[in-house]
Image (cartoon, rainbow, N blue to C red; front, side, top):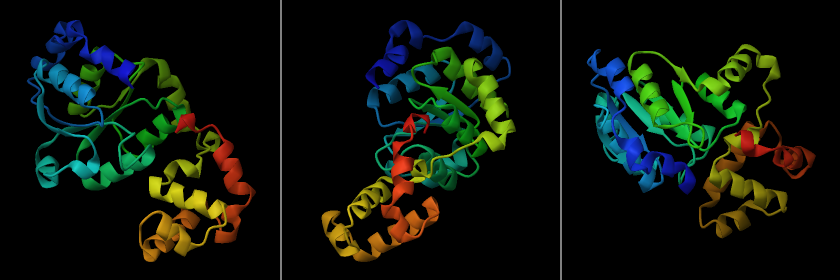
Length: 246
């Protein structure tokens, strides 16, 4: 994570990009952006980069749950720059929550995740641009935000063909349902696989029995299994699959 932020914090990369200014200032873009990332250094670097290129940063947060003025962002933000590995949500679940919170605000993902599956699914969920922290530079960020503000989408050139193929061939998609589980659901799943009972799980996780039972129902729905099968081979196979794509 730290190495990813160095691309943005280097002083020579925070200055305005003249070629980008030429494409945005002529069109008088007055884009308002909100930043959500759990690393303060990355939030600061993004803020400096955006403000030096004539974008207005409305604010920032380390997590979706930390946002106070949800109504204000809904009404004023044009674009949200969103990391996928936050404190309370991970992966596609982060996008799902952000879309519910801000249904009319465009999202630019800025994440360490770089698998084609998660990138493709992000676009299918309505994300307008997806940038990987270790494969994109500051110009990519400015270009992506600028295009989204003009009603366009942006895909990194080196993955564009793969993303197009992924979106055009649903028969090739294989989504690991484990990727859609919340951190709490993953903990409960691990406990169930050890044959622990709901009461025991609730005590271990310091939560209510009703919450555990609700999450078990969610697990069954997301994994497409009855409860007794959660202990069996299906989950083991899912967990053994390479989750780096998610």
